[in-house]
Image (cartoon, rainbow, N blue to C red):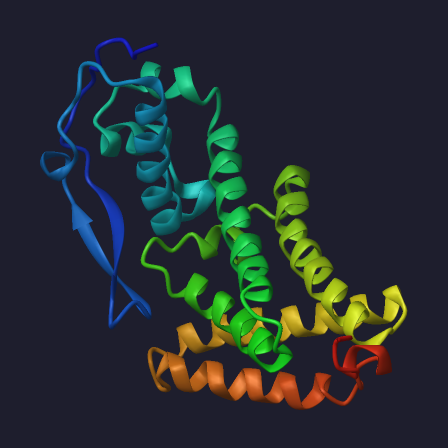
Length: 243
């Protein structure tokens, strides 16, 4: 399935933001309609959807949900508003599609870090690094998850809460397996570790590079490891394998 030919007027000015300073802060840039993507007459539906999401991310990150306009998103993508609405019936639908992808990115990064090694110290460092890498990503999608101006919307709040819950669930499973602590205890410890990584990563980003990312990750993961290692492993996990 393909899109109908695009149309509409160009030349609208709107705010945009690009990364600078090695991915650690935004500088405001003003773009014009002439700098937007050329209008395409036809494109496969999946490719068009990806293009619209990319353009919407730029606009939502630059302006926030409430100030973002569907006109600006369509213009940035080089399509008419009817094409945009063909794929996303409303601005909220478009925002939620972006938010789903952004949330999955965070959770997948944490799960990959946990699965990458059996050494718990390295797992702590890996999960910390996952949050820092996410907030430093040039696309700025983390702002949709952690700095959304639409938290009052139930559908948005549910997705944002899912990030903490899913990451904590994955970490709690490792803690419980390794220490034998009850599920509720492991979950509380996991939520604390998630909060430490997430909040410190956002603070690090806002400090505009006062510390190199590697040093920041080292500091926070060391703090987290010194705390979590105080809970000893189950005795059966310390035994050598049979044979």
